Image 1 (cartoon, rainbow, N blue to C red):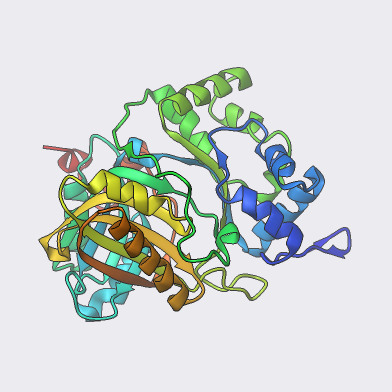
Image 2: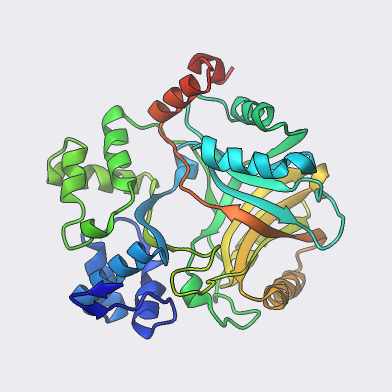
Length: 379
């Protein structure tokens, strides 16, 4: 990329870009009125350079998107869903989920190193369905569309960590962890008014390169039909309700980026089955390990060896991730947490997009699918 005839580096390994990304990926929790200024202050990179580099990386595709994230587990019924699809239909099912269902976010084909509990479930997606619509009915409709033989819905009971931070996780030694256990956050659905939805939908929309600068939110306030001061007040109230996540830059970490790099090569979904009653303790101990980007308490059922703790880690080397998994296993044993079963599901082909959460969008999608929206509501 060029700026005034000068080539602007777009590699994540460029020292200035790396300093920015170590902050911008997942360190700006909550709502910031001037998030790019905050990135500048925390990274030590001048504001003008932060804007220049983020624009260049976004235009080049090194960064996939820049946006304010939401805690969507509090806005819509959500779950990780594993699908058993005939092998000959797997690719077509993947494509349909990614292209045709805006309520499916992560779409991943996974494998295990050996045949084991749940290894027949190759297609994995995250699904969010806004109220008053039914997650079960939505998944049944998807199963009918793609020809899935069966599916397993695994909603999160508790969230232990949720972040990205690929740049700052490079080279972590196995066993690196926080001095204290992570916090456990219960999932709960929060009802919003139509006005709050308008503000939220404007808040979460991705930023285009030309929008990046000091005054990010004033145009969004106008988009929501609010005075700027009222927009900020409503966002602060949504933040207090536990709905506002972080301001974040999302790297292209699946495909090679514009600089020819792969930010990650392996996506590992770690599974543990721990004794009933120790789920909260186990989740908090797993999530304190710095390599973990996501950790949840999810009940997977007998199809998956009664797994109840799941966590995700990314890396460029499979052996490095397995060394981190071994360190976590050892830490759980030292903490006196009995593990009755464990496994690793490796991500292969994958696509990631933000899940739609708007009930207005869901009604429109139903009509496109030839389905009456009222038939998709909870019984």
